[in-house]
Amino acid sequence: MKKVMVVATLSALCVTTLFSFDAKVLKERSDNGYKSDAKLEYKIPDDKNIPNNQFGDLVKYGKELIVHTSKYIGPEVEDSKMRYAGNNLNCQSCHLDAGTKSYSSSYIGIFAAFPQYGARGDSIGTLADRINGCMQRSMNGKSLPLDSKEIKAMQAYMYWLSQGYPVAGVDKLEGRSLYPIDRKMIKTQAANPVKGGVVYEQQCASCHGANGEGIKNEGRANGYMYPPLWGEDTYNKGAGMYRLLKAADFIKSNMPLGATKENPILTDEEAYNVAAFINMDSHFRPDKADRIKDFPSEEVKAPDVYRPTIETKENQVGPFGKFIK
Ligand code: HEC
Ligand code: HEC
Image (cartoon, rainbow, N blue to C red):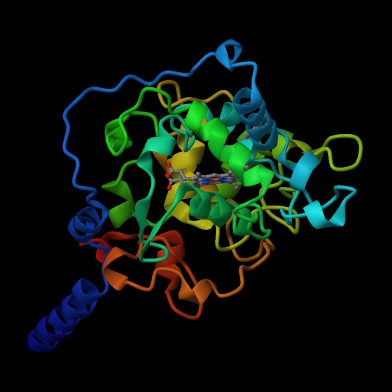
């Protein structure tokens, strides 16, 4: 009996080491050859310094597109050729305060971080590629043409928000990404969507609605006051927010609205559970075509990528220990 167990454990170990996320490999592939210990300060440039010229106009249009995405490229805009986004979210629905709020996947410094290795495609992508990643997934739509005024404007705005940061040196900028919830807890504990439902009712439903439907603003192509978290009109299953750990990291430092990394409202466990609740199977969400082609390289596949035909339920709700080397 004991022997059988040892063999079973050993073979389980072999399988899992073969298919688990390896931070070292990701680090090697992400290496851009630049080393610096310079301490960078998180700074939000003042809009009043945007110059009064063609460049400044493009920066301002870029900001407008991030804040009121649905008004310019949403599914309800008059000109059907401009309907690039498939839902009525704005970029700002997740990249809060026009992409300047720290720990909400901020755009501060971002222009200096591309081109960059991305594990999702196992390839090097540009900033425009990354924007189009969110267009296809978070916005459930299609890519903006690379020669469009819109993608140039978004990049001009991100360039504006990156002034003064060293090219390639911005990875160390605190506040640029999301802040991780307890990575020890997630290794041993599964998220509990039932408990998450209780958190949802108490802390989220007042804005996002009892059925995650959000509250729309008046008028056509005018977006949401409180964006939907599940249903037809929100991010699809290829989006980062559909991944449990990304959603939990975002929620912990940003939700309920007003929460920050320094002054969170939920505990790590509550954020983990409510993230599992919003993304659970019984909550309809659009799928993303060809999602099975994401993360072609197993060694750098994020542990919380969940596709029912490829991964297991444990990749959806944890515990994640056995997927992390
Ligand atoms: C539903 C939420 C959501 C929406 C809406 C959304 N994004 Fe994102 N975006 C994310 C998440 C989550 C990430 C990944 C953050 C991470 O990995 O740390 C991300 C990452 C990015 C990045 C790369 C950030 C980095 O530091 O490398 C860019 C650029 C970006 N988004 C642009 C956009 C643009 C432009 C729009 C609107 C057209 C948009 N996003 C809409 C959730 C969203
Ligand atoms: C006081 C209202 C309010 C409460 C309460 C609130 N949110 Fe939000 N939430 C917002 C707003 C507003 C945005 C979009 C920000 C923007 O557009 O500027 C947002 C955005 C989000 C997003 C990203 C956008 C999307 O549609 O997916 C998620 C995820 C989210 N909230 C989850 C939660 C969760 C989970 C809770 C409860 C723990 C919660 N929120 C509580 C107002 C609220």
